[in-house]
Image (cartoon, rainbow, N blue to C red; front, side):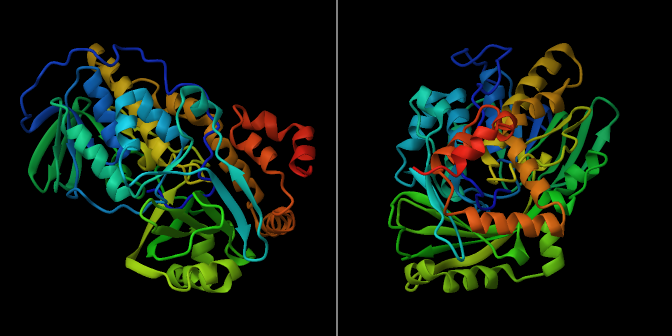
Length: 446
């Protein structure tokens, strides 16, 4: 799942998604009839990662069956920000797909993000992804997952090589030797040779199929999302906001995302091990923060809640989890691929979905199990996941956490936004962080 955004602009990965090793778009597709209970490739989960995999498979001329437990349009707990790598991933799959998305009235381009805390105003950093600029793409867009997922569903449904079965919950999966799987679902039994799980964090299917898979609280988070109508916008329009929590609840914070219709998404997100120790009511924590913060209190004074609060869990990519087991591959949140510094899950789900599709296509042609999927995904996301590992180290224990919070609170309004932007969009985060000149620029004026 994709709860609020820590640094929603962070993508710092300039290379293309992956060098395509098979025929690409514009290849003439073979029209296959609707599938029976037996299929070569089954994808469980029709979120962005699962549908991206299905659409990439279709580009390669391969049919797939997508099973989704819900019926579209459906809600999804998320920060509702489409970061720069989401936009590049859509463009890499099909430029017309991205252009269609950007023309939707429910999308809105963001120009910057504001960082602050309960005590300091902080700074504002523009969104300027060099990789996106080179392609002539925006750097960040907001869209409710209800709308974005329905958009992806409609586009995938137009592809004759993709069959999507809604309201089809998978109850159990049984491995059939080395040749495939049997799925028991609410719509009957299905058999497949290759299984792609895009089922989100804490999926019982993942735990059943992939050995040594667990939640690991220090590498996970829990969050609560609520929509508001009538909140006054930030003085600098078209930006997202991130506010640090007080020391007791760090690492974590409050995230605010605006939409084209004037409504906003407010997320309260906290690392799972801290939540287990403090046991706060996240809805109360969210409301308390909005009422206590001097600027937010004024802006939300006449705001009305839209619907009920929704919560979910999230696995961070601060540790390597197994992403495959034989002919079963994990996509996105199911594999714990979210960036801990910005909760960037949608883009990573799409990237892993594209790689999964290509590995399965090669394996199917050779009659083998997919090779080196884990290594390919972690190599592709290495730079993007590195900042989260740094943040994890800064909050590794109470002493480090206390020091880190003190430094952040003392320095938040002194950071040079240009230096932060340099780090955010660095093509090699490790090199940037090890360069002493970076820290001089970080506290330089201007």
